[in-house]
Length: 176
Image (tube, rainbow, N blue to C red; front, side, top):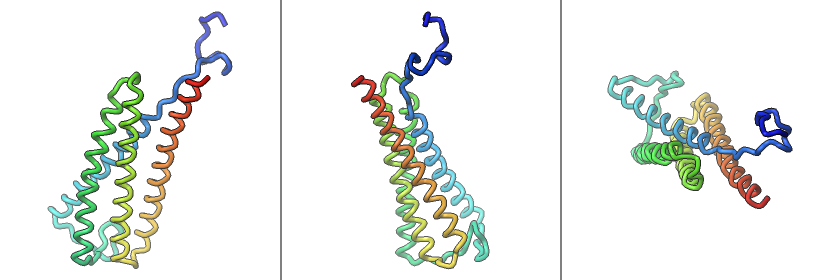
């Protein structure tokens, strides 16, 4: 080729291979989760402030009777989830703001954000398990939370695979 042909018109064998960057995708997943934690906490505080009452037939606010030990576990898990939100944001935001030439730092922060996101999902699953154990008759909640947890696990695994494939792609380019 004469060097003036646009990159997108070149055949794949002659086109310059671009380096894949999945850090923004993983960091966006971590920031979405951090934002959801904060929104959930805010809605809980608003509901408590407005004295919203629960209803046994309600899907959103069912009445669940918890023991003191279960309440203590829920509070501890919720505080841990709020700490995860700040850690996720503290790791993901700088990874998005760093320039692309700082690959190792961006990738390390993305791995940290993903690890904290996975920790948050484990805490969320524990919290759901406690709530569903306290109210075994809440079948629609059981189905809803199972689907949500499966979705989070799939997204976590896809994020992890994307970061690992990015590293493997860079190694192949260095060897070649």
